Amino acid sequence: MRKVIRNTVLGVVLALCSALLLLAPSTSAEAAEPTQDEINAFIASLNPVAPPCDIVYKFSDGETYEVTPAIAMTLMKTNADGSFYIDPTTNYYALDYDKCAAVVGALAIQHSKKSTSNSVDFVTHDGETIHYDGISYSGWTVDTQNETLWLMNAIMTFYNGEHEMTYKMGGYVEVDISDQHAWYYDDNGNVVWDSDVVTGNTSRGNGTTLGYWTITKYMTTNTTLVGENYASPVSYWMPFKGNSEGLHDATWRSSFGGQIYKTSGSHGCVNLPYAKAKSLYSLVHVGTPVIVHQ
Image 1 (cartoon, one colour):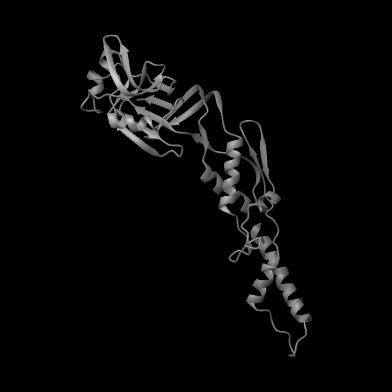
Image 2 (cartoon, helix red, strand yellow; image 1 turned 90 degrees about the vertical axis):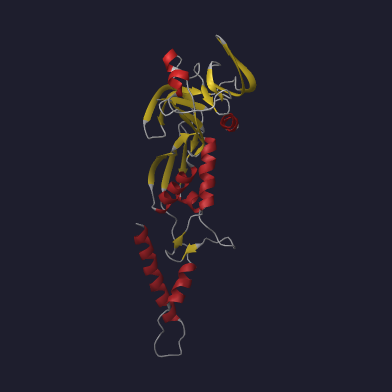
């Protein structure tokens, strides 16, 4: 459709240019044909039609937001004098990425996704999907970059229809019992921390509890973990199952990972090297999801 509109406009422009030049006084016997530069200059003086898009965003809170042709025009690049920039390769408007990203960002803030007693599909580090029901989670974030690119493409291809933003989980911790390894993913889904671990001793029935958890209000530093027949001072305590199981430093251990957990594991916690526990503590907060699987 865009190509048809552009070709129609060019046809009209060529006809006008020829007509104007024929009507203009001429010292020669024949009117001169318009040059390409003259045609380009004339095209630049015209405003092409606005993109005939009609994009309706639908949000989980029931609200909607419509991107009309008029709104789309506010997202176009402009020249220093405030006039619309015309891309010389297409003879059409060009979208401003920053303006589009600002709209997407504002919509994401105004309509943040909150799930209450909902479900979460979690994708593990090796690509396995685990489904959790009955999850109350409010850490969803919008994939701003991809959503911005989607909006720009939708406007310039004259999309008419509805669209739901793509949300993703914010920062979270993944603990893989089988691999005896843990990862922390930032809001963009990038691994920014990882470590070998030692989880609960399975031979004594103290295996770390599987499931979807969140860091609890008992998160603290420089405390002593007390249980039946033990009292362990730790510097960084990040509990995820009440105040009974969590991630913490274990300075009494000299090695982590492998098969240690099967016969010499913890009482249920996820043991970490001191330096790893310290850096993880600076990344998580109360409410950060912790997914434990095997």
